[in-house]
Amino acid sequence: MKMAKLMKYEDAVAKFDPVLGLEVHVELGTVTKMFDAAPNEFGGEPNTFVTPTSLGLPGSLPVVNRTAVEYAIKIGLALNCEIAEYCRFARKNYFYPDLTKAFQTSQYDEPIAHDGWVDVELDDGEIFRVQVERAHMEEDAGKNTHVGGASGRIHGAEYSLCDYNRAGVPLVEIVTRPIEGAGERAPEVAAKYVQTLRDIFRALGVSEARMERGNVRADVNVSLRPSVDAPFGTRTETKNVNSFRAIDKAVRYEISRQAAILSAGEKVIQETRHFHSEDGSTSSGREKSDAEDYRYFPEPDLVPVQPSREWVEELRATMPELPGARRRRLRGEWGFSDLEMRDVVAADALELIFETVEAGATPAAARKWWMGELSRLAKEAELSLGELAVTPALVAQLQSLVDAGKLNDKLARSALEGVLAGEGSLEEVIAGRGLEVVSDDGPLIAAIEQAMADNPDVVEKIKGGKMAAIGALMGPIMKATRGQADAGRVRELIMERI
Image 1 (tube, one colour):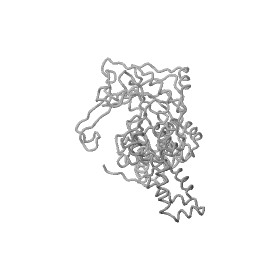
Image 2 (tube, one colour; image 1 turned 180 degrees about the vertical axis):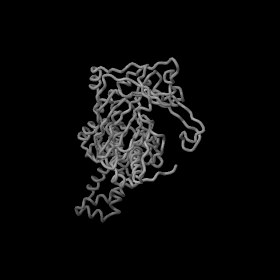
Image 3 (cartoon, rainbow, N blue to C red; image 1 turned 135 degrees about the vertical axis):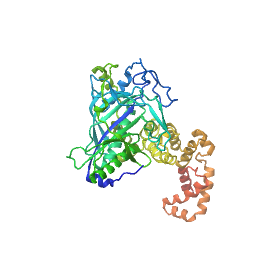
Image 4 (tube, rainbow, N blue to C red; image 1 turned 60 degrees about the horizontal axis):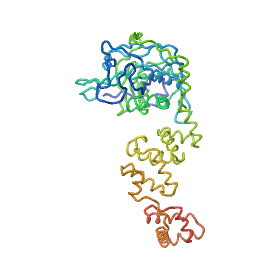
């Protein structure tokens, strides 16, 4: 693929004002699909989670999934949207090879939720408000696998395979109004906005929201204009970006690419683009259609959706504490600084720390383990914290052994490594590696007396009142006891002898 000409990012945002638009799709975690009783499950053998309706076979008729409507209303409420008293589905027409009906059932001019907003917290604590135009219900398409060729895309492929397991899975699409005023922080705003939505979906329990599975994905619209009071420029839409880092990179790349085009006196083409994770670039897809090109018209096989005000208020009453408010509350209860809490959130460690505290550890101890040793081990294994084979309950148990003096920090880290290496339960690893702290005075006294005999100058310093010199004796004592000495008891015994 030929690389586009790019302007240095810092120069691009100094010369042009970026405007963003984000369309975020979330797959809902219902038991069945949007319009039929086919299982809504991830994976499975191709074309096994299907019914005549999800395959669009003649004579089959769709029925709206009530739970999907409930989840869509909850999302709308969490985004401070107005919930429609009347809305309906429409047919979105263009050739969908991964929907056998050749159209998508969606909502167009009458969405379930509209006119909302969400506050996004940036890395330095600044709050950036994003206006939400609409949140509407629709169905997902199936999955195409293009066989042959070098890119895995349809261009150059020998043939394509269609798996309709995902066809008909309930989706809510959330569309922002133009996001202005982000300036040089546009990539961060885009990524943090999607992360905020991901956290809301999880808090509501409407989706697993696993981006690596495509539960949440974003279409990223970017345009440039010469100044903040100029008309919007021509936008591009980078499709199906499914990680926060990729969203940041896609925005950054498009700003640099479009700035180079405009500075050369050329025009940006309105088109869809593909994101390439290997180098953070985008490439041209197809010329972007406008809404009228989809020939929307009301879906004749589905009755309108009319959620009663009583039902909406019942759902509002069941809404959980949303992530932003919960983070602020926990930050105060745990005594974390703003920076510490932001680091926890950025590491996706908040729930792990919360569950560790619930299991009995102090907030400081839980944070120490997850943001320290466990983060290091996860990085070495190229895993996320949540993918480590360690539960919050185990971390709390480990800390309780440290608090009881049965392990010191060094031994606890060794025990943790043994658990991750598959050597057994925490108890089995401690026993197998012989990790318990030595608190029996006999072995400790022998190690202490040997260390004092080998270091008479240190002993004299301690006798002279330099208590910090005790640290110089701890090294050889710990070495003699294989790091298993009870440091507190060692200090007591040293002082008794001096």
